[in-house]
Image (cartoon, rainbow, N blue to C red):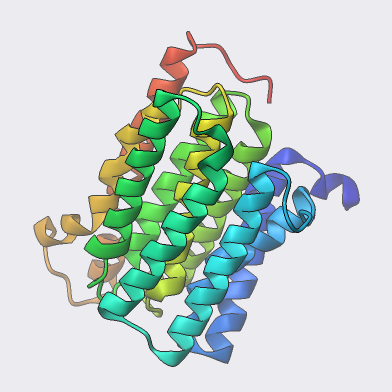
Length: 279
């Protein structure tokens, strides 16, 4: 069993999927509004199991990623437990994301390219924080599918670029988001809340580590950003009131969200000259 858990495929897919399924279910039983916190919680559990619990204060960018994610999860759980919504929740998310990005990026801000990367990430973080502030609590599929796509894009790009630890953690986050989506299909059961939006922020923090501290062609991640608009697909789909109609609508939104991620991964592969990663 220990050898199985040490397999990179298991660590980045099966393990986080199972952990996510368990945590989302347990949090649902404790308080339904906290179910989305299972995504970030699952990510942190897998991080600790696979990479180890980072020192505090953390000496590395991945250590900063872990503790920033833990702080975000705590903020999300508290906000969702007391019912913080709307503009206040957006401001809390924006402050956490901006502080986390700057904390992680500070040692790498020694070039114009790094500064541009951080500005792009901050702009994306602002959109995640404020443009999604009015996300309907009863419709979690679109934001969860967007998170799945972004995490897949970061993980796939990192894998092609031979950034093994980032690839594993990004794919683990994608699997954890997939666990949440499974809980909400064919019937949506949970809200997204600040905890869910924190999980999307974690994907941006992973992208920051990839762009600033590796030689990977991280610019291709810009091709995955249309995944953030996956929720708009619903307005073009036939309205189905039955179980089959709702299930098909959720599946279609998820597929549309993932397509830009596949484009980004394909572009990363093409830029390497079609060479496979040693991982």
